[in-house]
Length: 290
Length: 245
Ligand SMILES: Nc1ncnc2c1ncn2[C@@H]1O[C@H](COP(=O)(O)OP(=O)(O)OP(=O)(O)O)[C@@H](O)[C@H]1O
Ligand SMILES: [Mg+2]
Image (cartoon, rainbow over all chains, first blue to last red; front, top):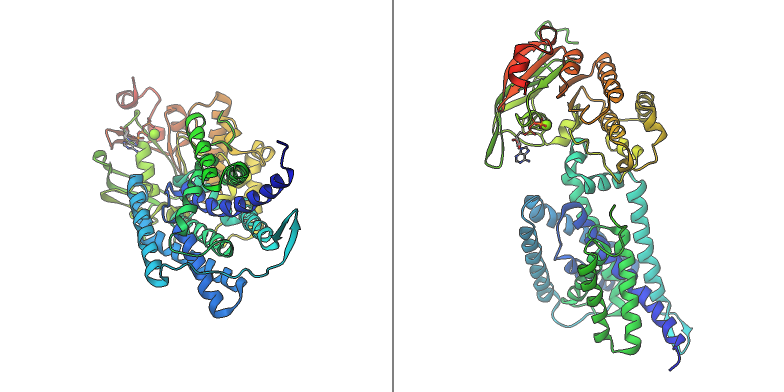
């Protein structure tokens, strides 16, 4: 059997596209973990609520881009409120308390969405439907746009972290919460802001991804599970590592599904996860600690 | 400073503070004060609560009893970031440089405050780079890659970015070679010359007596002795009683 080059190229494109969306979800998750040691089990529901906000705004305004912006802002605000009410009082407690708190929130949000929008999946119409030929496929330009936009959001955020005044606050707080505070950085505010940014990124991925699948109240589950794998493989709290891990895992699944069916291809991610935990628990994409 | 004729409140006044870590009672009513521009030494054996006293003043732990006043104002329950903005600089005993931030970025954490103009930021940077030329050379290097002595300088320089009225300096000479120790002493003197008060925790008794105007000696979570530095000698019976081995 020869090497199916056409399939490999198609799957490379697919892998990069899903990888970028996954990276956007996982970035927020890893950022939140890095700065406040909170594993946010409600992250997938923020992604789902973002998608629903997209559905609602798109239905009333007809503008996909407006829907994207409003969904990001609303979910970011919701994330900030959630952090202030539930996580801020638990800072520094046993991690189990924050796991239970965020898990509880995820159940509430899922059931809220079910009650509000019902069990039938909604659709988000993509902003343009142009296609180009990729071998025997008519490949939608929109998918490439998703990858580019996700990359732009992550890249913009990275620049902000590196050069922005508040970016330095975030990095300092992530490294040493106590010393950051002693330098006059309002750490509780930084925590809330980071949670809001993470929530906003999840919402953006929800809206961008909406057109590719249906929007329903359970859609967060698959994604958050994959995002958790990415965060562990990328090194908990490591933004660059998460982006690389997201693309790596998505490519792996994409290639695997050339030979096996997609639900079996998922196993590839779990194998990577288990190998990482066994042999390099600090993450695959982090420099070897000296 | 005050022209009202009434006595000026000390810059920092610590009154009978009791501090706990969980259930362990560490400070048993510590009382001390530091005047504006004064260098005050705080001596005591390992584990008597010197660092805990500094942390309590900085708002990093909160006392269950007693109070901390800053220029006569009640600040006991304020969070650390507010105290930093009010003019307390903190240099912890393990230095706690932001290891992944560059030297410049470490300094910027204290510069990005409301009301500091770009020109003023540059002035402050120029000042510390004049004090610590080695930091200027290494400004783009990650904090974690600096040597111990350089990290100590960066920790002091970083606190200076806040334009503090007082710096809480916890064992700045720990683990440094003699040449660095004398450099730290010069810095303390220079800060004193600028009118910055310093509460200096040290194991190095000669240095503390030489650099300070007054000295407190702690034992078991309380201040046991208080004297003018000029009244104490390195081999004083008091020093031997509380600090000798
Ligand atoms: N975070 C903490 N939790 C529990 N106990 C603590 C904590 N930090 C300090 N202690 C205890 O409090 C006591 C006083 O500690 P502190 O660091 O204030 O002493 P110190 O006088 O600064 O000593 P050293 O000269 O060794 O630095 C010690 O017995 C120490 O074990
Ligand atoms: Mg100490």
